[in-house]
Length: 265
Image (cartoon, rainbow, N blue to C red; front, side, top):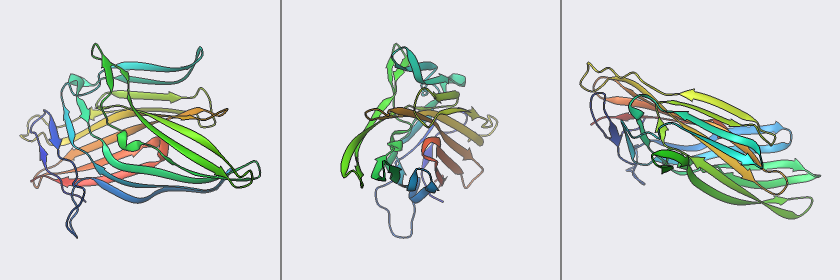
């Protein structure tokens, strides 16, 4: 459980401050996750593969008109569509932005050409919930989160480069479909929807709101480029005093789950 200060009442918008970089011993503040979040061993071609995270929330700002609206983006390879993102806005275009500061990293040892290909990837999931690029009020491109990593092959004693390009978008109470099935070994199709069932008859708008956001990651390397998709889920539950809410952020692509709770002051 974590404590954080929230502002905003009723059925309208709300916000909460960023988690501080350091806190006194024995006290937890802000939304945080650290440690191992996923492990994959003895699954061909991996000798081992594990993911760990050190994250804390940035400032969150949500309200009517704060979402990305409706949009559709196609990612092409020549004339073929290799990935797509479709978002249909929810009521009042409700949504907003909130990033997670820090990193989610995967380390791997995969069997290839008689040896182990050693390396790591920063999924750039901390950019989930970032602002997008728009033209005439319509989203044309997500925030581009970039990362480059060198992989070392133990048998070939050589290196190769993998460029990771993450497209990240704001949160919405609408519906999201992400398809990455055009190329590569990891074909992914995901669908999720948000909602807002807070009670307008209560002064604090007690209830639950769920926001979703598309996650598309492109793995670009010579001869073996591909895309993987996912959907981030942010769930906030407002309950009677002492005002608390529960948060869940799930990044499907990295199989990472972040959990937290906050107390209103």
